[in-house]
Image (cartoon, rainbow, N blue to C red; front, side, top):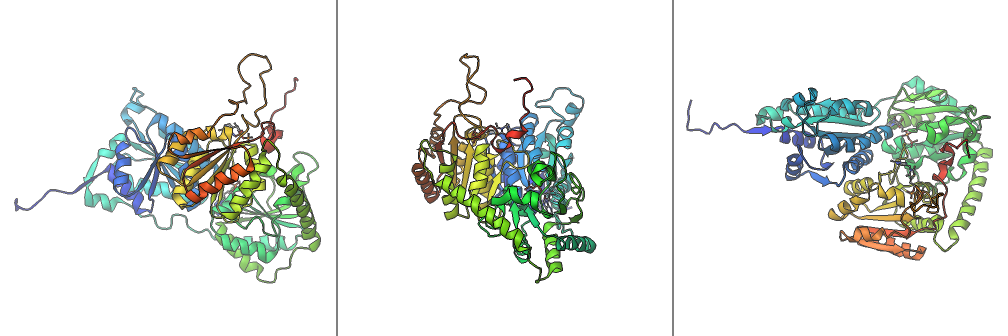
Amino acid sequence: MDMTTDTKLEVTDGFHLVIDALKLNGIDTIFGLPGIPITDLTRMAQAEGMRVISFRHEQNAGNAAAVAGFLTQKPGICLTVSAPGFLNGLTALANATTNCFPMILISGSSEREIVDLQQGDYEEMDQLAIAKPLCKAAFRVLHAEDIGVGIARAIRAAVSGRPGGVYLDLPAKLFAQTLDADVGKKSLIKVVDPAPRQIPALDAVQRAVDLLKSAKRPLILLGKGAAYAQADSDIRALVERTGIPYLPMSMAKGLLPDTHEQSAAAARSYVLPEADVVVLIGARLNWLLSHGKGKTWGGKASKAWGGQKFIQIDISPQEADSNVRIDAPLIGDIGSCVSALLTSIGTNWPKPPSEWTSAIAERKDKNIAKMGETLAKNPTPMNFHSALNVVRDIIKANPDALLVNEGANALDFTRSIVDMYKPRKRIDVGTWGVMGIGMGYCVAAAAVTGEQVIAIEGDSAFGFSGMEVETICRYNLPVCIVIFNNNGVYKGTDANPTGKPDPAPTAFVKGARYDKIIEAFGGTGVHATTPAELRKGMEEAIRSRKPTLINAVIDETAGTESGRITSLNPSAKKK
Ligand code: ADP
Ligand code: TZD
């Protein structure tokens, strides 16, 4: 052997294999929070050209990853340290799974031998076991040569079929393991067709079309699965070619512009009980749709079926019949299902009877006119309606902006008042109605799309992730946060019935100046007590694209307990 030639082997290690495997699969962003054992992973990922966005709390990084997954159809990556960092991220992973958003939570973990014998390691926890029941799939990689497989399996699990959250456990020791660089490279997998199309069966399509043909009062319901699927033009074609009125669920708003003449949103309480055949496209009949039965659907009693027949388009074959009978399940990906329906209905589909569409139009016009009157008022102090009248104009003028929304009243009023014009522009509390998604969603929305982001936040809702205002300023993201400040959870008027000095459980510091928070980090703070001041603040934020926080002072008596879901509060038997 000639000892004069350079025989030094090129090596790689666990750190680089993780980064290379992600990059190979087109993943270019990591949302996370550094610490043992993943600090160097964040540094090296940045050095290797990935965008690494570092948060102040893992739950917010996790929420960012989840919504990045929703917006891009690629799994969003959240990277955390072990035990407490992992647990902080886990809430977001469970939320992503609940919402059917693809996401991978990658957490470093402590030494297996010590964890398994419960000998008390630094941040010891059996993370894999804890994650399993809360996500779609969970994997652990022990050897550097398996990193490629581990990442590939995580990606497939996250985006194929019904999307969801995946946990990937990477023990500290893995990162330092070395491998011949060439062997390492060959061990990586570029996932082919990670979310394969699932074509619906022809007889299922025929069954759905036959049922639809029989309808006198058909209705289409669009859910956030339809928004996720990115089958925008086919969905629009289905709605327009059939002439069927449609209702968008919260995050499906804008799939067709909310101002579309077939939108029945302003006549929701009329169309749900009256419809005879309902086409569900990427929407579950869960609590948000009153489980498809009861008074909302014209049922005689609270759990009685209202008589509707359902066509349900969903990728999950187990979804049908979860609450009421589904007469025509159409199982497949939404793109393939909707396109199969379009082929089958052709171009001469008869429009629904005009008695149905004109009855809807009549209700709609009345409700819209009534809302117009309310919005035109300018009371002092400002209330939800007069403030949202401004937001409504701003979104109309900036239809590409993303709207993040959380709170109770701040959520319900925004959803019904602010029209959306384009798909996937509205992101909110989702299936759980969870507080705390706000700032994480803002960061991801801005980072992933580059568009202006506007957040409409209840003052309570904002508090769950408020520290990420620093993150927004640090990365100089075009985010305008508007806090509807009514001095508390739901309202600011509760008092302690005992007369003792502690405030009521739902009350906050009165007259808090949230705008000062962003000023601490170099952002723009605005204190707005009138619609005019709010408008000026929002317009300037959008013009400058500077991180902005507007403290919009709202009448503390406005709003209701729990917003629109007051009825879910258990009522006390003993008064
Ligand atoms: P919403 O809250 O807007 O009513 P849900 O989250 O309840 O919507 O429902 C979303 C549904 O969409 C889920 O049942 C999910 O399985 C389904 N889904 C998600 N992505 C797709 C897709 N690409 N094709 C078909 N169904 C999908
Ligand atoms: N904790 C979590 C994680 N999620 C929740 N949904 C709640 C608590 C309970 N909750 C709601 O459902 S809305 C809300 C809480 C605390 C806040 C409502 O107050 P707000 O909005 O200031 O954000 P409004 O506009 O004043 O109603």
